[in-house]
Image (cartoon, rainbow over all chains, first blue to last red; front, side, top):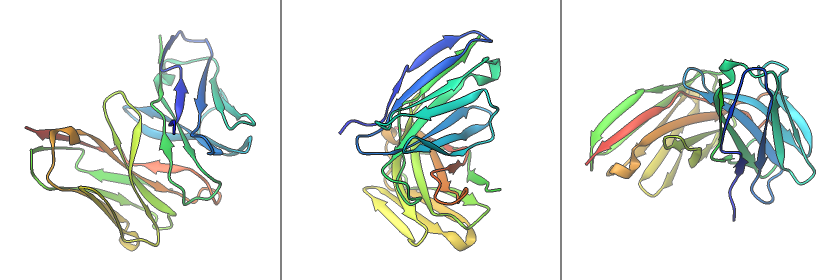
Amino acid sequence: KAGVTQTPRYLIKTRGQQVTLSCSPISGHRSVSWYQQTPGQGLQFLFEYFSETQRNKGNFPGRFSGRQFSNSRSEMNVSTLELGDSALYLCASSQGQGATGELFFGEGSRLTVL
Amino acid sequence: KQEVTQIPAALSVPEGENLVLNCSFTDSAIYNLQWFRQDPGKGLTSLLLIQSSQREQTSGRLNASLDKSSGRSTLYIAASQPGDSATYLCAVRDPFQGGSEKLVFGKGTKLTVNP
């Protein structure tokens, strides 16, 4: 069974540009959540989707947005990139809507903003 | 606001040693606690998941315990090997607006096992 797949794995952008990251969850998983990992702040929750609906959003500016498609695949978008957006962006999937399920993470998309 | 702390931040041990990693959290109203491993430049690998009603979980050489009332969890690694070298992260499932998938992470313990 394939794991969580994130693309692209690495990308370099310049300030002011925008970026779209993609996440394909484990087959059968309907919940997808996104996290940002930086050396200073560690792992921080961005948002969570279930059945194409955003259920929760972390404390990030409106430049960060996302969506989920009917096949459970998810994308996140960051507009007007800033240097501080350089980070590893991790996607996680779980099977259902309940809070007791195990989360499985992808390898991440490493974004560098110059 | 839930806060998760992991002590120590880094640990270096000789091969074969048994070791314990610590995790503490401030709000005991959690759904569960999950331990992860992260290799440099990689994603997170789930090691063990302990539900709030459970006291411990075991997988191979790993044993995780949970004391929800005191806000503590430990990850015990038996007979450590160089391949265990990685950063170990503890995360609690926080009741963020109910039924959420949100995890609150600690900063991790970087483990080095020397041959």
